[in-house]
Image (cartoon, rainbow, N blue to C red; front, side):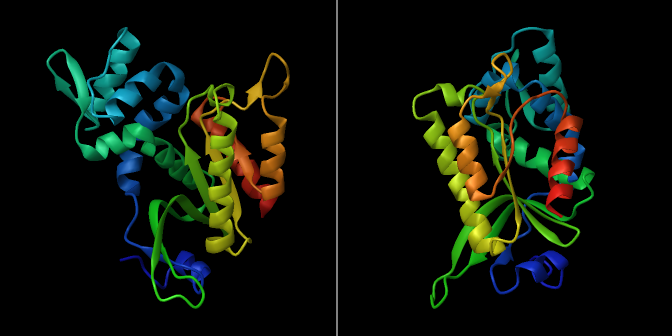
Length: 246
């Protein structure tokens, strides 16, 4: 059970309660090199991530892909099956299907000098006057200088905003984070929305959906959109957001 005397539990007291241990930081650290590589090679790796996350064999094309698969084998995420690969177990499937982004943000929060970092964390809460417990899973939580940080991670297609209903899907995900901030953070947290969808059109020099960015602004969300340069650059962008909100 989580330590109810911890600073994070104290910050949440009277609002919600941590339920269960959440994701394992030691495991996230151990496969951090794999996780960061997924972020930096997301587009070419995405078909393999979809296959692995669905429990299907991975299609391996080229030496770069095979090298990544062998790295994943060494870290217990993939297992060799004949001349191909599959997810090693159900936990690995969850990781490949999007859990890797939660781990990436947990590591980034640590690198940004956050405390009490948790990811894949179950939250138990009860509505005022209610008698029934409710549960939600928050992608990542932390404290930064005493400020609660709530992170929502969406490992979605890079071109989602160009697809039918893609903008609405993204907005619904943003509403979920706003809900977390309201009910779990008393609207006093720093809510950070992280996605692998490309929000910015470099050639045009503008956001692909200015309306969506305006909605995020009205909801009070900090949006870290995909640029896939390096994981270190993502951490620097995160640190800038945290410092500005502190």
